Image (cartoon, rainbow, N blue to C red; front, side, top):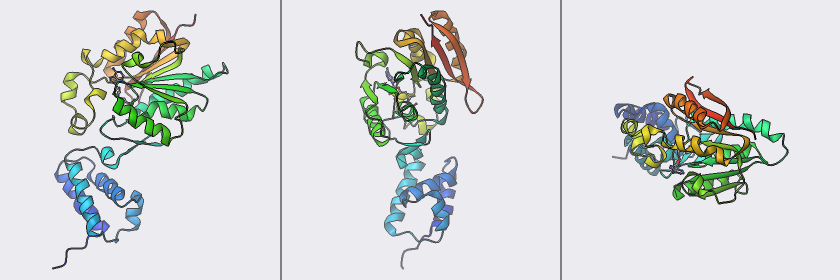
Length: 295
Ligand SMILES: C[S@@+](CC[C@H](N)C(=O)[O-])C[C@H]1O[C@@H](n2cnc3c(N)ncnc32)[C@H](O)[C@@H]1O
């Protein structure tokens, strides 16, 4: 008997049902993204080619992708790409998959930069814990005269970030350094106008309760922080002012429940003037920003 010929329509229906039975959220979307990826099509093209038959090789490769997804591997690691700030970033298990709420950091950076840009010199920006380079590269693209430094403790993550910077044409203005927060910045480097960071901020207890997609596949180094998730946030608030130019801003992403504590800590240092917290699109406080006192 000759093997069954599968067409796109039927294959999508069957694979969506299978993903649903295996407990994968948004099964139809997952089935479509994976098939579009396998066939090198846009998702909409699947609908325009519903009756297209698949070759045996295509069918075999698609089944492998579905199997990986059933094992809770994130969709973005399977397709190798995540959109952030309308730019495509290469992602793989060496880096955290950038989240949409982190775009808030870029948004705030652009707002604060407007004030600094009046000084008629290149704006200096530091992204701490850059991962795939999402924040650093997005701000570099938006601000063609900015100079951006981006650090990470993981040299593997920095390799991914360098590739992304090259893809987006900003390698000449984004300087990547490996090391522990500020420790990565060469001595004698000038202060920064903006310090941006989405640091690890998940507590040990929260980490255990994360979805398998996150807990079992994304780098633990990118997620978990000691001191109830506040270890890096506290270090950045306490020492950030030493690396800021007078009037510069530090902009930090965190969990909603950490924002109150962050504002208190900012006040305690006595080194910052204005401070604010900003809500994300789900109306939760997500970002805290503080301005270094002017001399
Ligand atoms: C939450 S991820 C953020 C990645 C990226 N900025 C984003 O928003 O998608 C935190 C990043 O901090 C890095 N990291 C962890 N500990 C660090 C440290 N001590 N110094 C510098 N970077 C660190 C991790 O490797 C990871 O890339």
